[in-house]
Image (tube, rainbow, N blue to C red):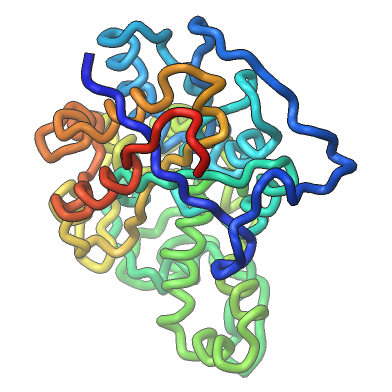
Length: 363
């Protein structure tokens, strides 16, 4: 078996420059942390992003095959749902790893802190593009971020200095060059990191391209954020849960429907689906890796360091995930759609995640 390395601690607090918090600082009303005994049969529990889940599942299967440890359990809960479960507590029955298609939020760090979880390791694993996909026989789409905003925002400028409920019913209503088909988008729910990233990168990015909305950012940042990222709920957008397969089924049944998903899932369904061009750039491995594709993001997993002595094999799982033959440019995760970090980034992440710290040593 590959050698197992210990994890480097990254202590998170609600403020970036705040001092490290340890268990002795947790409110006494929460009680003393329970004492657990490690069992060799205890399985690593992994929760979180549906986008990252296929990569974790592949690594879990490989890890279970080459090591003496049980194959980890991977549960798809969405990024937000994953952090909620991850931050419930310390112990072998609690999730040890949370997959995420966005960075952890300060509110989630605070949720963890309140449960005594003060040592978390962030591992950036690669990149993914967010695509607007439709069935292969459906009309071609080439969208700007501004057009995405104008199609899906709850309110848009009325041209007279005010705001109005989004009136656009078809893509042609948004721009003459777009097809005359109804706006009907199936996308992830608010608990999803894909939804968060889409709102930030596509919706907010598009809002910044519209002068009336961009001006609001200078005068009222909170209102700008609300206007830019609030998606219309009049039937033009449909929350489709955390199951990307359900979105694919919807696209196959309705040629007018568009689905929001990660590139990795599109790649697995290229026989049935195609991705919209964004500002003239198609969503491909090379375009996303180069940064030319306009709606791309980083992916992560987070490790609960305080579970290391309680759940055997966590270090080994992280070691397997960060092997070059897993996440490198010719690794088996690329076959699943992972877009690798650069060689420099991979080395930095590996050194960060797998720093040598003896098991049980004080951090």
